[in-house]
Structure formats: structure tokens, C-alpha cells
Image (cartoon, rainbow, N blue to C red; front, side, top):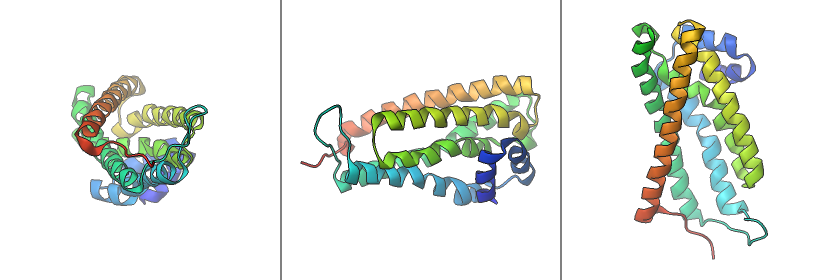
Length: 200
């Protein structure tokens, strides 16, 4: 069912959000059928792009990571994505009471997981690490995910659209704060010896 939802959320989001709400997958099924699989797309793409293809800054030399370094960083990246979905989902459920969402409709992890689908898919562009191409693809994916968030939250939580808009804006703010926190954690991890190691 998760795979069908993953496709449907991209092709007909309105109907699919209704279907997701009605079928209400467990967190374990959601992770097995959607999150763990889709998070592999940017992870494996980034590993291949960083260790095998490499990138250039301006007219500089081609830069690549060693396979071990790329693997370490990609495992951490994968763990961050998988845990980030769950944490954001729990934040959504925590805020849900404030916006009058019935406890039986706390679908935060579902919302976070399916909203992130475009970001997972566009992660395939990391196979070829070109700054402008990756940035443009990333902006498109973020816009798509934001649209899914604003469209899906009122449907999934069974609340009016005006209240859903404010709720979705709060979720977006939390997501941005989590991103900043992740960047700070990345700096700390790099400083204790898990930074990138480049090929000579």
C-alpha cells in the first residue's frame, strides 16, 4: 500500500491524502514500505556522485571523496533523514491539539513521510554533483513538498483549510529549525573526526 501511496501522492495528491487518512498505516509499515526505501535514493546517489563522479568548483580540479569517507557520511545522512521524519512527525502530533485536531487523527509521521517524497526522489540528482543543477532541482523539490504539506495537512488532520494553513506554516517553521539544527550537528560531527576525506 505504501508504494501506491508514494506514487499517488505525486500524481493526484488530493485523492491520495484522503486514501492515506482512510487506510492509516502503522509507523512500522510506513517505514518499511516508504521511508527506508525512498531515503536510499539520495543516499546511494550521493555516495556514487561524491566517490565516483566528483565535482568542480569553478575551473578548479576535480574533487572526490574516498569511498570510506563517502560511505561514512552517507550512512549519517541516511540516519538523519530517517530519524528526522519521525521527529518532525511527533512535533506535528504535539502541535495538533493546539489546532483542534482530534486525537484519533494524529497522523504526523504519515504527513512528514509523504510530504518528503519529492525531496527523496529529486535526491537522484546527487549522482552528478553539479551545483546549479542540484540547486535548481532542490528548489523545485522543496516547493513541491511545501505544496503537499499545505494541501495534505487539512485533509489528513480533518480540520478546516484556514486552520490547516496556519498549522502547516507552523510545521514548515519547525522543519526549517530542524534543518538549521542538523547543519550545526554536522559541523560538530566533522570537528570530532567524521569530516570528509578527499582523494589525493
